[in-house]
Length: 335
Image: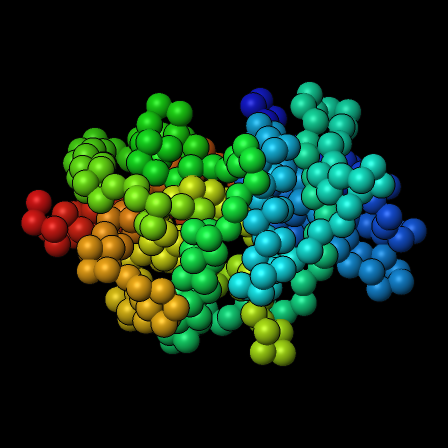
């Protein structure tokens, strides 16, 4: 999220100004104020007005998504909702007829893309205790989305992120080089170099047939499900793109890959998935490979986002735990 040479605190000050001065780009009620609620790749604001109006403003990180890529994200979430695959948040059209607005603020060299989403009622499922029911539902939702991605006629010049070995490990990795993450010492690096090689080998052999590598949500965690009066809504499609279908389970356990509940949650997710869509033994055999791919991507993400509070909290011990997970995974596949 940071701009080179600028502290996160200073950046957020500029973005708060941008958020509030940009509300006039939509038909937002008088007196509305934008308040920061989350910072990750983007800055997300709750917009509230005295009349009771609420919406969610997303200000995009510079140079992360193009205008076309954001259009494609909105097209997919709109199609999923319209075809009753899963309920997704709607969005507001700007006064100029475009749902994607571009904003400028003194202090930032580059303009920022912005989208104003409808406020979605509901609460994320409880992530304490037994989460099996939530993961079973996640699996079923993922399967429905994957079936849709296979059948949906995508808009021309469809543009989204790619989540594969090259975009995690390559020279232009989306989230940076995992070797530059905190606490990656020589011994950890040596282990993870071997892990990277084995991941790449297995995923190359696994292949990218369209029925296993297609459009995915890529961040389908319990935190991105909102439940209200027995209706479940799926939010935050910002990372949606091309990837292995089973990467959606790997994303579902982001940052908790070493939790002792994972085998049970994995079984629940697979059970939910199979209630909607077939899953071959060959596919199931690579779930753990994709968990390691995601874990390595998260290690890189922590390193490239270390100025933000969440990565700072996650960083201590994360590299060592990643190495331990990698060693256990390699042992499980006979390396």
